[in-house]
Image (tube, rainbow, N blue to C red):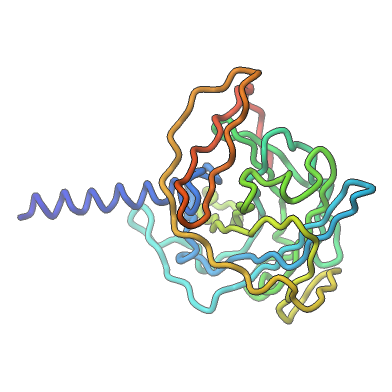
Length: 267
């Protein structure tokens, strides 16, 4: 009986690790061993505005940060995590290949942030906006705050920038202590049409949001299994399409990572 219980506990632990490694979409974003599940963090984001300038080939994505009313304290390595009582210092996004340099700047609380870095994880690109602690130093400061991302070529639209052409994956990181422990992840539906949605009352930076024309944000989909690794395609091979998360369709494997020399990370 004791042996069966031990095996059951081990199986549950392995399932938890697998779920964390491929949370929500199976892409393994953000490719770090931090707490991703929003059940153990109060923070999440919604897309509230998107605009395009086809002549200049630029666009702006505005997302609003929120603080959930409740948060379950999780445990990690035998101790409680700090994720319910921390702040936000970094925003990460999962971009498509060959989009480096596409985020010209970000704005928050009428301030422009240009500290935007691109790095490589397991052959995939990640982009991060940091540091943000000046404006997001507590739950009260985070709640209803708006961050806008200003896009330009080579990936000047939301659809071009997103690794998955149906959702844009993001992660909200706490401030590094001994390590980055908390990185709650979420999804924003990729929109192909400019819109202005509903802005929750509170600080909004320089953003003016009109009444919603796109309805309420959709809930995050159920977690999907991680895609099987594939061999790196030859230069002339057609890239595989992004995973399809529509109901009734089987998920497709993500493209293989590109062969690049590792680049130093910052921030």
